[in-house]
Length: 292
Image (cartoon, rainbow, N blue to C red):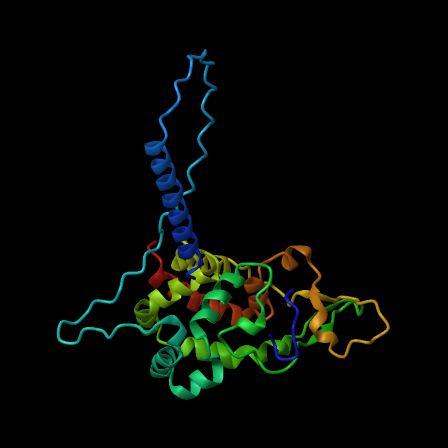
Protein backbone atom coordinates (compact mmCIF):
# COMPACT_ATOMS: atom_id res chain seq x y z
CA UNK A 1 0.00 0.00 0.00
CA UNK A 2 1.33 3.43 -0.81
CA UNK A 3 2.38 5.01 2.43
CA UNK A 4 0.25 7.86 3.59
CA UNK A 5 1.85 11.15 4.61
CA UNK A 6 0.17 13.47 7.05
CA UNK A 7 -1.73 15.10 4.21
CA UNK A 8 -2.66 12.20 2.04
CA UNK A 9 0.12 12.37 -0.24
CA UNK A 10 -3.88 10.38 -2.17
CA UNK A 11 23.34 21.93 -24.46
CA UNK A 12 25.85 23.19 -26.72
CA UNK A 13 28.57 20.80 -25.53
CA UNK A 14 27.92 18.11 -28.18
CA UNK A 15 28.09 20.75 -30.91
CA UNK A 16 31.35 22.13 -29.53
CA UNK A 17 32.86 18.63 -29.29
CA UNK A 18 31.73 17.78 -32.83
CA UNK A 19 33.25 21.02 -34.16
CA UNK A 20 36.51 20.34 -32.31
CA UNK A 21 36.76 16.82 -33.73
CA UNK A 22 36.00 18.10 -37.24
CA UNK A 23 38.65 20.85 -36.98
CA UNK A 24 41.23 18.43 -35.59
CA UNK A 25 40.54 15.95 -38.38
CA UNK A 26 40.72 18.65 -41.03
CA UNK A 27 44.03 19.88 -39.59
CA UNK A 28 45.51 16.38 -39.43
CA UNK A 29 44.54 15.32 -42.93
CA UNK A 30 45.55 18.71 -44.36
CA UNK A 31 48.97 18.37 -42.76
CA UNK A 32 49.36 14.80 -44.13
CA UNK A 33 48.40 16.02 -47.60
CA UNK A 34 51.05 18.77 -47.43
CA UNK A 35 53.75 16.30 -46.27
CA UNK A 36 52.88 13.84 -49.02
CA UNK A 37 53.30 16.59 -51.61
CA UNK A 38 56.77 17.58 -50.30
CA UNK A 39 58.44 14.14 -49.78
CA UNK A 40 58.54 11.52 -52.58
CA UNK A 41 57.04 8.30 -51.46
CA UNK A 42 59.71 5.54 -51.04
CA UNK A 43 59.58 2.48 -53.30
CA UNK A 44 58.64 -0.46 -51.16
CA UNK A 45 59.51 -4.05 -52.19
CA UNK A 46 56.53 -6.23 -52.75
CA UNK A 47 55.44 -8.17 -49.74
CA UNK A 48 53.24 -11.17 -49.36
CA UNK A 49 49.73 -10.22 -48.58
CA UNK A 50 48.27 -12.09 -45.66
CA UNK A 51 44.68 -13.18 -45.99
CA UNK A 52 42.46 -10.51 -44.64
CA UNK A 53 40.60 -11.15 -41.42
CA UNK A 54 36.88 -11.61 -41.75
CA UNK A 55 35.02 -8.35 -41.24
CA UNK A 56 33.73 -7.73 -37.76
CA UNK A 57 30.01 -8.30 -37.43
CA UNK A 58 28.06 -5.12 -37.81
CA UNK A 59 26.59 -3.70 -34.64
CA UNK A 60 22.83 -3.93 -34.52
CA UNK A 61 21.08 -0.75 -35.49
CA UNK A 62 19.44 1.11 -32.61
CA UNK A 63 15.89 0.10 -32.00
CA UNK A 64 13.38 2.30 -33.74
CA UNK A 65 10.94 4.18 -31.51
CA UNK A 66 7.73 2.24 -30.98
CA UNK A 67 4.90 3.02 -33.34
CA UNK A 68 2.33 5.46 -31.99
CA UNK A 69 -0.76 3.57 -30.95
CA UNK A 70 -3.04 6.41 -29.83
CA UNK A 71 -2.21 9.57 -31.81
CA UNK A 72 -3.55 12.88 -30.56
CA UNK A 73 -4.98 14.91 -33.39
CA UNK A 74 -4.60 18.69 -33.00
CA UNK A 75 -7.86 20.57 -32.65
CA UNK A 76 -9.36 21.82 -35.88
CA UNK A 77 -8.39 25.44 -36.50
CA UNK A 78 -11.05 27.97 -37.37
CA UNK A 79 -10.00 30.05 -40.41
CA UNK A 80 -11.41 33.18 -38.83
CA UNK A 81 -9.54 32.67 -35.56
CA UNK A 82 -6.33 30.63 -35.91
CA UNK A 83 -5.00 29.40 -32.55
CA UNK A 84 -2.24 31.38 -30.89
CA UNK A 85 1.11 29.56 -30.71
CA UNK A 86 1.80 27.73 -27.47
CA UNK A 87 4.36 29.23 -25.10
CA UNK A 88 7.62 27.46 -24.37
CA UNK A 89 7.27 24.74 -21.76
CA UNK A 90 9.42 26.66 -19.28
CA UNK A 91 7.08 29.67 -19.57
CA UNK A 92 3.77 27.84 -19.87
CA UNK A 93 2.44 28.09 -16.30
CA UNK A 94 0.38 31.29 -16.72
CA UNK A 95 -1.08 30.09 -20.02
CA UNK A 96 -1.96 26.66 -18.67
CA UNK A 97 -3.33 28.05 -15.41
CA UNK A 98 -5.65 30.47 -17.22
CA UNK A 99 -7.06 27.69 -19.41
CA UNK A 100 -7.53 25.38 -16.43
CA UNK A 101 -9.35 28.13 -14.56
CA UNK A 102 -11.57 28.67 -17.59
CA UNK A 103 -12.36 24.95 -17.72
CA UNK A 104 -12.83 24.27 -14.03
CA UNK A 105 -13.57 27.65 -12.51
CA UNK A 106 -10.75 29.47 -10.73
CA UNK A 107 -11.87 28.50 -7.19
CA UNK A 108 -11.82 24.81 -8.09
CA UNK A 109 -8.51 25.14 -9.92
CA UNK A 110 -6.93 26.80 -6.88
CA UNK A 111 -8.48 24.36 -4.42
CA UNK A 112 -7.78 21.06 -6.11
CA UNK A 113 -4.77 21.63 -8.40
CA UNK A 114 -1.07 22.39 -8.02
CA UNK A 115 -0.77 24.94 -10.82
CA UNK A 116 2.97 25.58 -10.65
CA UNK A 117 4.60 23.30 -13.21
CA UNK A 118 1.26 21.64 -13.85
CA UNK A 119 2.22 20.04 -17.18
CA UNK A 120 5.41 18.50 -15.81
CA UNK A 121 3.60 17.38 -12.67
CA UNK A 122 0.81 15.76 -14.66
CA UNK A 123 3.21 13.93 -16.97
CA UNK A 124 5.39 12.63 -14.13
CA UNK A 125 2.40 11.54 -12.07
CA UNK A 126 0.65 9.76 -14.93
CA UNK A 127 3.84 7.77 -15.51
CA UNK A 128 4.36 7.12 -11.80
CA UNK A 129 0.80 5.96 -11.19
CA UNK A 130 1.61 2.91 -13.30
CA UNK A 131 4.69 2.16 -11.19
CA UNK A 132 5.27 1.16 -7.58
CA UNK A 133 5.57 4.68 -6.19
CA UNK A 134 4.06 8.04 -7.09
CA UNK A 135 5.87 10.77 -5.10
CA UNK A 136 3.41 13.26 -3.67
CA UNK A 137 5.72 16.19 -4.30
CA UNK A 138 5.11 15.71 -8.03
CA UNK A 139 1.32 15.43 -7.89
CA UNK A 140 -0.68 17.93 -10.00
CA UNK A 141 -3.52 17.74 -7.48
CA UNK A 142 -3.65 18.92 -3.88
CA UNK A 143 -3.26 16.08 -1.37
CA UNK A 144 -6.45 15.06 0.42
CA UNK A 145 -6.75 16.62 3.89
CA UNK A 146 -6.84 14.50 7.02
CA UNK A 147 -5.16 11.32 8.12
CA UNK A 148 -5.49 7.74 6.96
CA UNK A 149 -7.75 5.86 9.34
CA UNK A 150 -7.93 2.17 10.15
CA UNK A 151 -10.11 0.11 12.42
CA UNK A 152 -9.87 -3.23 14.19
CA UNK A 153 -11.27 -6.13 12.20
CA UNK A 154 -13.89 -8.50 13.60
CA UNK A 155 -11.20 -10.81 14.96
CA UNK A 156 -9.89 -7.97 17.13
CA UNK A 157 -6.31 -8.54 16.00
CA UNK A 158 -5.99 -7.42 12.37
CA UNK A 159 -6.95 -4.02 10.98
CA UNK A 160 -8.84 -2.83 7.94
CA UNK A 161 -9.26 0.55 6.28
CA UNK A 162 -11.88 2.39 8.28
CA UNK A 163 -15.22 2.70 6.45
CA UNK A 164 -15.36 6.45 7.05
CA UNK A 165 -11.85 6.95 5.59
CA UNK A 166 -13.46 7.24 2.14
CA UNK A 167 -15.31 10.42 3.17
CA UNK A 168 -12.05 12.35 2.91
CA UNK A 169 -12.00 11.68 -0.84
CA UNK A 170 -15.62 12.46 -1.64
CA UNK A 171 -15.10 16.19 -2.41
CA UNK A 172 -12.41 15.34 -4.94
CA UNK A 173 -14.54 12.63 -6.53
CA UNK A 174 -17.44 15.06 -6.84
CA UNK A 175 -15.07 17.61 -8.39
CA UNK A 176 -13.78 15.03 -10.90
CA UNK A 177 -17.34 14.07 -11.85
CA UNK A 178 -18.26 17.71 -12.41
CA UNK A 179 -15.53 18.22 -15.05
CA UNK A 180 -16.83 18.23 -18.61
CA UNK A 181 -14.74 15.41 -20.10
CA UNK A 182 -15.20 16.64 -23.67
CA UNK A 183 -13.93 20.12 -22.85
CA UNK A 184 -11.08 18.70 -20.75
CA UNK A 185 -9.92 16.48 -23.63
CA UNK A 186 -10.20 19.41 -26.06
CA UNK A 187 -7.87 21.39 -23.80
CA UNK A 188 -5.53 18.40 -23.54
CA UNK A 189 -5.36 18.20 -27.35
CA UNK A 190 -4.58 21.91 -27.58
CA UNK A 191 -1.80 21.63 -24.98
CA UNK A 192 -0.53 18.23 -26.12
CA UNK A 193 2.83 19.44 -27.57
CA UNK A 194 3.69 20.65 -24.06
CA UNK A 195 2.80 17.29 -22.52
CA UNK A 196 4.84 15.47 -25.17
CA UNK A 197 7.88 17.70 -24.60
CA UNK A 198 7.63 17.22 -20.84
CA UNK A 199 7.44 13.45 -21.28
CA UNK A 200 10.55 13.35 -23.48
CA UNK A 201 12.41 15.59 -21.03
CA UNK A 202 11.39 13.24 -18.22
CA UNK A 203 13.59 10.59 -19.84
CA UNK A 204 11.51 9.05 -22.61
CA UNK A 205 12.82 10.47 -25.93
CA UNK A 206 10.98 9.01 -28.88
CA UNK A 207 8.16 7.76 -26.68
CA UNK A 208 4.61 9.00 -27.03
CA UNK A 209 2.97 10.36 -23.89
CA UNK A 210 -0.62 9.66 -24.89
CA UNK A 211 0.23 5.98 -25.33
CA UNK A 212 1.50 5.92 -21.75
CA UNK A 213 -1.63 7.72 -20.58
CA UNK A 214 -3.87 5.10 -22.16
CA UNK A 215 -1.73 2.32 -20.72
CA UNK A 216 -2.11 3.72 -17.20
CA UNK A 217 -5.83 4.36 -17.68
CA UNK A 218 -6.30 0.72 -18.66
CA UNK A 219 -4.48 -0.35 -15.53
CA UNK A 220 -6.57 1.85 -13.26
CA UNK A 221 -9.84 0.83 -14.90
CA UNK A 222 -8.95 -2.83 -14.39
CA UNK A 223 -8.36 -2.39 -10.63
CA UNK A 224 -10.71 -4.78 -8.83
CA UNK A 225 -13.24 -3.30 -6.43
CA UNK A 226 -12.89 -5.06 -3.07
CA UNK A 227 -16.02 -6.56 -1.55
CA UNK A 228 -14.96 -5.31 1.90
CA UNK A 229 -12.47 -2.77 3.21
CA UNK A 230 -8.99 -4.29 2.65
CA UNK A 231 -6.92 -5.45 5.59
CA UNK A 232 -3.88 -3.37 6.38
CA UNK A 233 -0.81 -3.86 8.56
CA UNK A 234 1.37 -1.36 10.35
CA UNK A 235 5.00 -1.78 9.29
CA UNK A 236 7.22 -2.03 12.32
CA UNK A 237 10.28 0.24 12.32
CA UNK A 238 13.11 -0.69 14.63
CA UNK A 239 14.93 2.04 16.49
CA UNK A 240 14.94 4.05 19.67
CA UNK A 241 13.18 7.10 18.23
CA UNK A 242 9.41 6.58 18.31
CA UNK A 243 7.44 7.37 15.18
CA UNK A 244 5.36 10.53 15.45
CA UNK A 245 3.28 9.65 12.36
CA UNK A 246 2.55 5.92 12.46
CA UNK A 247 -0.35 6.27 10.02
CA UNK A 248 2.14 6.75 7.16
CA UNK A 249 3.46 3.21 7.62
CA UNK A 250 0.40 1.15 6.73
CA UNK A 251 0.59 -1.39 3.93
CA UNK A 252 -1.94 -3.81 2.52
CA UNK A 253 -1.86 -7.13 4.34
CA UNK A 254 -2.65 -9.03 1.14
CA UNK A 255 0.65 -9.34 -0.84
CA UNK A 256 -1.29 -9.26 -4.13
CA UNK A 257 -2.83 -5.90 -3.23
CA UNK A 258 0.48 -4.54 -1.95
CA UNK A 259 2.10 -5.55 -5.29
CA UNK A 260 -0.34 -3.39 -7.29
CA UNK A 261 0.78 -0.11 -8.85
CA UNK A 262 0.70 3.14 -6.90
CA UNK A 263 -2.38 4.32 -8.78
CA UNK A 264 -4.29 1.12 -8.14
CA UNK A 265 -3.51 1.23 -4.42
CA UNK A 266 -4.70 4.83 -4.24
CA UNK A 267 -8.01 3.77 -5.81
CA UNK A 268 -8.43 0.95 -3.30
CA UNK A 269 -8.07 3.19 -0.27
CA UNK A 270 -10.67 5.64 -1.55
CA UNK A 271 -13.51 3.26 -0.78
CA UNK A 272 -15.55 1.06 -3.11
CA UNK A 273 -18.16 3.68 -4.05
CA UNK A 274 -15.58 6.38 -4.78
CA UNK A 275 -13.52 3.86 -6.73
CA UNK A 276 -16.43 2.89 -8.97
CA UNK A 277 -17.34 6.51 -9.61
CA UNK A 278 -13.77 7.48 -10.52
CA UNK A 279 -13.35 4.41 -12.73
CA UNK A 280 -16.50 5.38 -14.62
CA UNK A 281 -14.96 8.80 -15.24
CA UNK A 282 -11.71 7.16 -16.37
CA UNK A 283 -13.63 4.95 -18.82
CA UNK A 284 -15.20 8.08 -20.31
CA UNK A 285 -11.78 9.75 -20.54
CA UNK A 286 -10.18 6.71 -22.17
CA UNK A 287 -12.87 6.60 -24.82
CA UNK A 288 -11.90 10.12 -25.86
CA UNK A 289 -8.07 9.85 -25.85
CA UNK A 290 -7.62 6.30 -27.19
CA UNK A 291 -7.96 5.09 -30.76
CA UNK A 292 -9.74 1.92 -29.67
